[in-house]
Every structure is written in C-alpha cells, then in structure tokens.
Picture 1 (cartoon, rainbow, N blue to C red):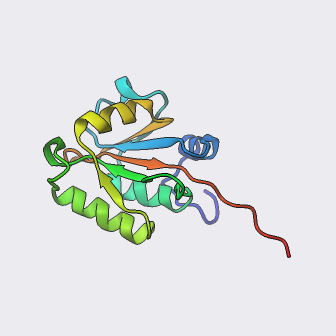
Picture 2 (picture 1 turned 90 degrees about the vertical axis):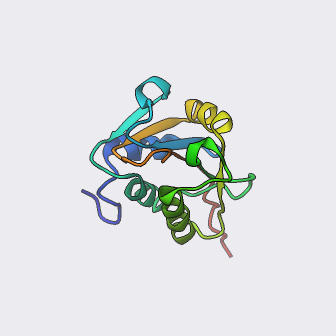
Amino acid sequence: MLIGLPAILGPDLLFTLRAMGHGEEIAIVDGNYPAQDHARRLIRADGHDLIAVIGAILAVLPLDDRAEGAIFRASEGNDPTRAGDIHRRIDAACARLAPGHAVRPLDGGALYPRIRAAHAVVATSEPALYANVILRKGVIAPACVT
C-alpha cells in the first residue's frame, strides 16, 4: 500500500502507467473481451469492475489534451449511436473524473484494432457487454519557475 494511490492500482498496473509515453493508449476491457489474445501487454484486474478501474487510473494518469480525443469507448452493439446503461455510467464517471474530456463512442471497426494496438490491456471482471474503454496518455507540463 502507498499513500495517495488508489489501492486497486497494483504494481503491474502502476508500472505500466508510468512506463507509458505521451500519446500511448491503455485499454480497460470487460470480462468477456478476449484480452489474452489481443493484448500486447496484459494486466489482470480480476474481481474489479470497469468503473472502479477507470476511476483509479484517472486519479493518476494525465489525459492527452493535444489530440482529438483522449477517452474512447465501445457502443451498444458496436453502433456509436447506441448506448446502454454501462455506457451512460462510463460517460458520467469520465465527466466527473476528467472534466473537459469528452468520451467518444466508437464502432467495432475502429475500436478493436485500437485495443490491439494499445500499449496495454487491463482485463476487468466487468459483466456488462461492450464495456471497453481506451484512455490516451497526456503529459504533465513542468512547473514554471518565476
């Protein structure tokens, strides 16, 4: 345990978040997603739901504010015009935890290749279908000295 860090962030996930560079993406996926097969680097978050993992990551990860979009999510039936309860919960959590960053729904053709290309995939035990999120890492600017 460490002071000031969410306990859900284990050593492997903390290492991965710190090792990621600006513009790299991390995918947080539901329990049905074929994470083992699709991940370049796989981090298990068994026993945790998607919203809790996203909340813990957003507590420490700066999001990219220089690119077009830093938060992406799956859509109901892979149709970006449709949203289920989990998508509304993702949108609400991200609005609260990352104000100023809109959540962009993607169709399967855009989402799944992006997950495969992500720096890492975090596999949760989330039971909801189409509950997959991608976060794009930003930078922490150096403090100005006056």
